[in-house]
Length: 421
Image (cartoon, rainbow, N blue to C red; front, side):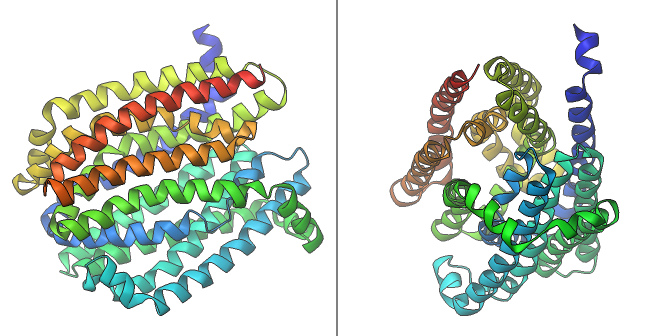
């Protein structure tokens, strides 16, 4: 059985992405001990705010039409979905520019962070190149060219990490951290675009206004429903940063941002790789009438066994690990890691399966689940900020409520797979 698994295309594709993602995430992870000694927590707090704001636009930059690129049987339809995604990305980029220009002062006031003002104008480039990368990511997944996806992620992470360290030695402060983030997105998007033009130049001629309009109508549920879901999911993480900045300080936000970044390393380099290949394989299984439930259970078990040792170590030795690796001043971040690990672990194991509603056409229900998660998280932080006046209390409530929520979410996802076995 193991020989069959090791020789399977699914295993090879997963290994390719996991390998590339591992390198892509190890690079910034190795950079962390340098960065935490070059930049104070408040600089990381402002970086977290910038990422949170830009992410709200970036996740809907394509109208989520890039997810549909995997679904059509005809390649002509898929390439027109690529063209449609590019068009929507341009529109959202211009919209983001309008927002940061017209609402700059209100945004700074709401976040209780006037220092973020000038950096908001870096948001549109992030949106543009993130949209290009997201779209071509799924195009190359459809073509099963996972090597290019891995290289693009390595380009982004190495550029961001290297630039950040360089600007740290130059004492550029927050500007250096945010510039590094922006440059990473730009080079990753350009790499995808250049590889696409080189490998599939003839495909661009198949894009037409009529076909894009037809695809926009056929897959209208993606921007209408899935955009709401992913925006709500991103607002969940962005909202945490906003609330910490508002109720507490950019210093505590800096501690939290490093905590969350390090905890989500396995979520990023393993979970996203598994999710990418799971979506491609599960779409085919469902379309062909295969046993989607069995495949989902196998993926869930494998993901859980992969993540459990990592998070167990953090729960037991979190503060000591953070103090040793990042420096003694960062011990509070290790305490936050201990508290939040159960939540992040559950998020890690549900990430691949969360795409099941997209495949079986239950995106509206997925959006409702996402709203429930946001209510629980924001309610926990409001209690920590307004009632307890203690960030750790809010984090404990988040971890407990999200563990229970995620368990119920998993049972619901597995139930959906019974629709077509």
